[in-house]
Image (cartoon, rainbow, N blue to C red):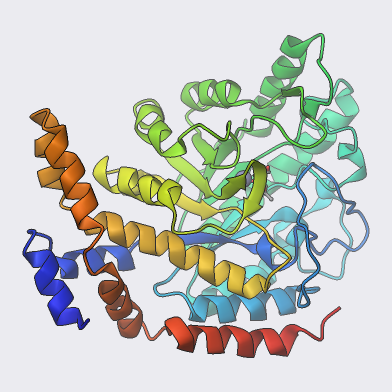
Length: 412
Ligand code: RNT
Ligand code: ZN
């Protein structure tokens, strides 16, 4: 179907496709660097594995150096319409030096900022509280030993400074997201002390005030992880309370709740108490498995809530998945485009009509509308968007993804 016919089909329902496309172009998605190398990072001396987050698979093409990762990212961005962001983890430093986590400085990340400037993208950041000998017990900021807590507090402080520096250099606030793996394999006896220690450590880490135009603190909750099945210290209730009391962003990762919970439903509830939200859009399959996101109901509902509740301007959309059984660059491209497609669908909904029906308790019309709307030519509007942004679709996209994958599959 031509774009003109699609435009007319939506106009018939009172929906302007041009307004939707203009809006979509302005929504950045923060693409996570760690899909490119299976969450390994570039530390040459201090890194270990762990933290209960695992990429599985051995598809060829894992990025082994910052240059390889940047080349892969450049390719991925060229297949995604619009201008986006990069979400870096502290373990992705780019330097010949081997600073430990409590020694990292801005200079170790400066090449990323130079590259981001060249590419016209903005950066987000994360301290790395896992994959390190001092995190082997799955306890960091809540560790009973003060020495271990202090080590991680220092890491966190340095990351906030680095993030603020990045935000200032790029002229866009850098979201610095804190996720710690802390928890217990089996039922703990003293949850209160662990949570109190986490609270005190977070306070110490975040004592310094940063300009909100440079850096924004976010905290990420979790229900459980591999190795911490019985108790996660930084649970949802813990961080929800913390974020409200301290004025930080709350990060909702779609894989961090019970599989039957609807994360889209949480947005409006949380948004009444916290100013800004960070999303880790992900696809848990039975557990926090971090599969590449599909254009499925979970993502569609998430996008619909962001649009319907007018939360886009105070929500930072980040992605969090890692699959090493498929082309890593394709994973980024497919997942990021799916988030955009979901947003486009939400922007093309006849929201006024739906809200009116709901207010009148006319649930029949609400249901008829949502279901009839599924037949509208969303694909033609997406094709127009990608064509305007010089990005391929369909078979042409597959050709490009294959072509690039062939250039990296010799890596081992
Ligand atoms: C872990 C969290 C966290 C990580 C990244 C790498 O369960 O989701 O966001 O995936 O920090
Ligand atoms: Zn996450």
